[in-house]
Length: 305
Image 1 (cartoon, one colour):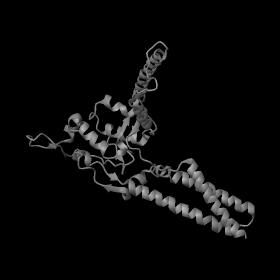
Image 2 (image 1 turned 90 degrees about the vertical axis):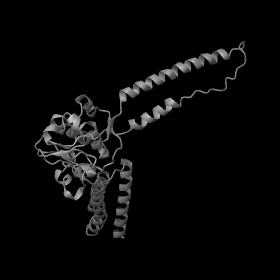
Image 3 (image 1 turned 45 degrees about the vertical axis):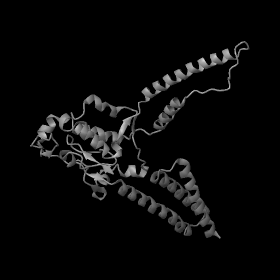
Image 4 (image 1 turned 180 degrees about the horizontal axis):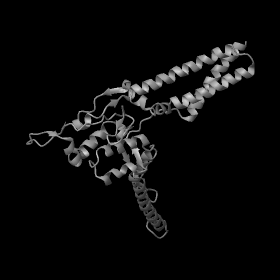
């Protein structure tokens, strides 16, 4: 889903996340809030919410907001702390290694009673498991700047809802998404346009009902699937055009140098399309481009014969 949000304290729209929403300008209207069973008045004014956001919003609303889309679920990797733990484990294993070497030297002496030195059972699975787990999160890409900005916007719009010191994790360099989302460069280019992002075509539905009304009424959700479909359709149409267009151009082109220039231009354009329109790795993009140029060359030879 795609979520864009307008900061109520700023003049223009600011992006809240990739799966995202648009936050409307909020007039000081009332909104519902769950209270204790014995309370009879469940209506809160905007002034009350602004005075005590830590009470009426707090972590119960912030966590609901984060769980509304996986782009918002970003947590620290704790690189420095994990490295210290690895150093501690390494030192423990080194000490064990030294002890085992000493034992081996002792029991390998001729005058010592016979012992079976061909067996060693030390369980290092805990250390290995920790290393493997850390390697997995270490390979994760850092949180995208626009997703980080989304969290900043929410906390700015609801100042005081979360203690300021507990917001600082957003600014750490080791912040990573819990579930990374793969976006093609072409989609990221499209999403730079506010007109594209805020189009009603992508609107998905109302915000989660678990959010309080005074938060829910400001958010509009957008469908990731719809945007991905549009990007994939664009890539497919342009790709087909690049397969057909050079055939017609070559049919009416004379001279080998001119034909080679046409093939070169379309080959480079196809490489750019594969690199921007898909999440293919560089060697995969080169392979697809090589196949494309081979097809064009075959048609060139057929046209010359």
